Image 1 (cartoon, one colour):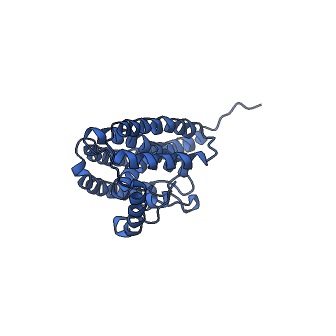
Image 2 (cartoon, rainbow, N blue to C red):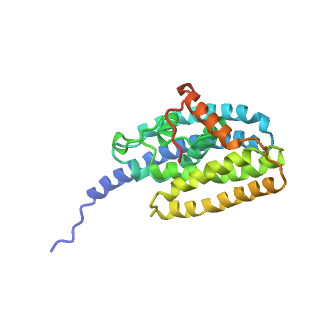
Image 3 (tube, rainbow, N blue to C red):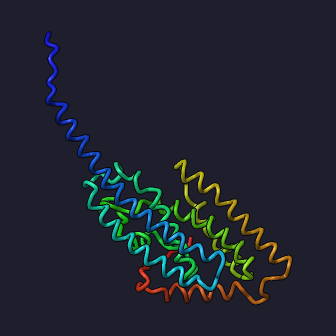
Length: 251
């Protein structure tokens, strides 16, 4: 019986390994660019916690940074071999979730409603259908929205500090609807389920802020529900595609 080993087969294995490492290195370089843009957008939005008058400017600046991310995602999609999205997706999953959070915050601050997955994908230059290639995964979208919920909880508290007593009331209603929407989902993914479990604490924190406002008589005595409904319908109707936003949904 021969113990001969054909060493040439290992040469082919090495070629495969080299090619794999080259692809992953290209991915890492492109993801770093997206990460840098994401950090810049997050920093630009932090101003909302200390100066409410600069919200519009912060959103405008964040949109410019998001546009740069769209170009980088296009370059990233060209690196990924056809049909191998999930083989390499661990490289960009976290940063994509962060971008969903940032986009959701921008749209909420501008128009007061929940951005859809389709709109987020459009703004990032991604597909929504897995069969079409590089796409925005549903779980990444849902995780990003939950990150936004935590930020809104913080924003509600800081709005009171800055003297805006109406904003927490609107955020509270939005968060209650968001929580109701997530409860419609039968979540089995461990990471997503755990993140959703934290949502109830964000909702509770905002409810406590609203309670404090109410017992101190700081909220307006006007019919807020009527005004909010009217303004919301007008806002959604007028939120044009020129802002890179398509259809929207309320959770």
